[in-house]
Length: 333
Image (cartoon, rainbow, N blue to C red; front, side):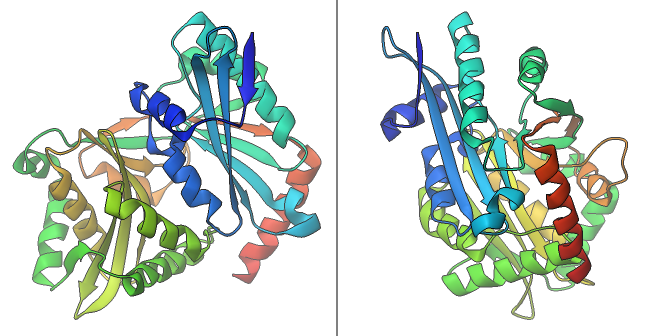
């Protein structure tokens, strides 16, 4: 028999994630702690255990994000499962992950609009099972850059136009370094906020950045980079670091300042060259839809992959209401 529980020892959970070939920071208890200390965020963590011997068979962790509170919460809340669920590569593991997702659907179905599973690897072997549980697959691109090599090798793999931009950033007096205090964390947030508003994308509360900085940086699991020109903050990039992967988490920059984004990415690549194996450059959109960020990322020489995403709508009616509300918010921003 398989038991699904939300009561477990953190050490047992983290040991499973750490030892799993696909284990990642988004399925760790440390990121759950960050989410639980963030305004309008809540982490759900579920574990599947073999009742006969107590073996951990699968884990699933999601972030519930609510744009509004109170009665409107169920019309504005969504769940993001990134890099999960994780399960044992066995028949029991497969049975466990199905039980886990069924339990999850029952648990959250009445309180959120939809769930999105953001894949960090090829999940084609699991697609049929996920489809049977109502998770619909769609394409979504990503870029992965090999960090397991020397700095000059990474540099030579970058497109000429990007290298030119990096050199010009230096000539223009742009300096990139790591954030040193809470005031600079606030400056980073303001840059991300400005960027997200420009593209009409919802942004998390500043408490996400503050908590991540306080909890993860000292442990080596996050880096906050800030770009300065004439001692003024003009750009930022935040990474999450776990096992052999550096994940590009948040980015923002002043509009009209040339080459700052190139300088930030290069700083991340050269600082992590030979220390980690992969820089996960984050999403690059649907292959059939124009997306300017994709071309920017492509020219850093990474491998383009199409791991895709899954989405399950828990209430079509609530989603329609949510989409109308989102359009209204965008029109006002």
